[in-house]
Length: 387
Image 1 (spheres, helix red, strand yellow):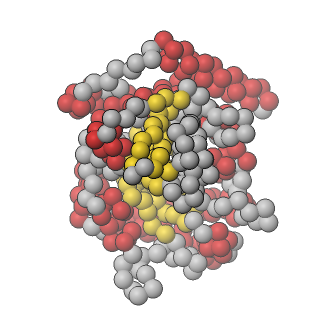
Image 2 (tube, rainbow, N blue to C red):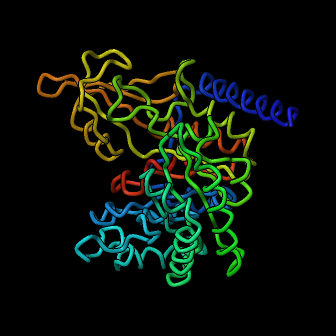
């Protein structure tokens, strides 16, 4: 085991220095024009098929009829359907009306998109989500409710001819909780039920960086045997509520901060690399800051989402210099709005290209995108992943 850990550590360090070498050797990465991107996709189809490219499709982007590019995906995950404390999939609200997530899951737009993806021999999954510790404690610790939830998930997969299920249970750290064993049982029973009817069904789980590094609340060495893919949500290292602005998906960071490199170093000691999916953002965050300095202090409650599409529009309409941070290997910029200083940290073609190169060099299973529709009407950002 110690030898395995050491080899994985040395592998990650080697890839890190390789990335630095590439950056120093070629500071200006060249990209194809948007017009040529469809040809890129066709020419690189074999490469794409060997590397998972997964896109999360939130209900709210369907509601806005955002442009989606399913031709670039090997897997589409609809996000998502909540659970309640009775172990049910949450389809109706307290007034008996369809929830927005259930409504758009059954919409003509999604059914058409699902058909298009599956007709191209790619996969469609649904994400079952919960962000409430109390609900997870109640349902997962009760064998009857746990079975009830799994049966409903299984029926959903069968009834809608899905190719699997994604689990996004984001349990906030709680030192008094003993939820780990219940998570283990849930995934064991989910696998047993789903694979019994179709062994090819995909089971994936989304994990934030804290869960990877601290192996809590999930016991990764056990869960890894029950799932096909583990999606590392390698973003939101800085959030709208952060007291300082900063990179949201840094490859490297200061010693007292999390980074993608550190998360992967930890993940590779617990998880087979063939199961690891690196999650990347198609968005950034915007804050009002006290000055123009990198990682400046933010003003309270000023943080907000900035999609790639919004960032493009800001850069197009204003004379702004995009800056680059060598440590995090990510872009950022500042600008003035109504005499207020604003900073935006985000991902662009250059930073995403480094992340995709890391996936290829480490031979991870692939990459996932949060979220489809955030790129706007132009597919140019996809070039970083396909080239």
